[in-house]
Length: 177
Image 1 (cartoon, rainbow, N blue to C red):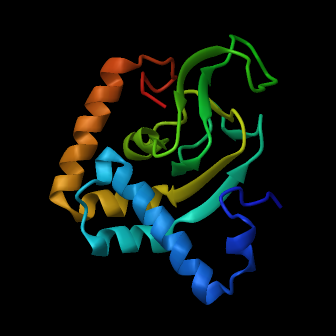
Image 2: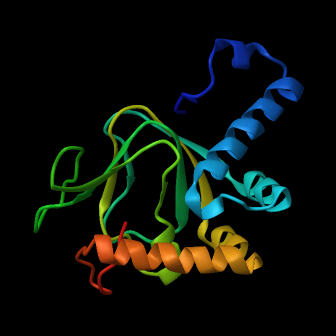
């Protein structure tokens, strides 16, 4: 089991009835910092938080690989994630190998476009250091996005922006990470 890197000694020593609201507050602040969800209702944010799962990674860990199913979206709570295109014909993938496309940081959202387009992952994602994420399954992410018209429009704008910024190889066509 991987350690939860956000939790410090004080938070770990608190009883759950006290520490859980702090964790919810931290996650709420994270979501509000993501442009896609800024201005979202408290009810929507609360629903998202209740559906999210924690995922923690050590330096060099793989979040996902090119060609794998786009089964969830990641919200970075702490740390940095490198998005890389692996060299042609590479079977073994590891941190630091391949063309660096971008580095995602605290507050960034990644993997959401694959969830929306139903395409496989277009790149590899590696933890640059210790990374804590919150994950939202593809089904829950789509349900959340479709629940509010304004959010659905923002998702479409985000897709368009990423498609213009990144052109990544993919057997199903080009898509951003």
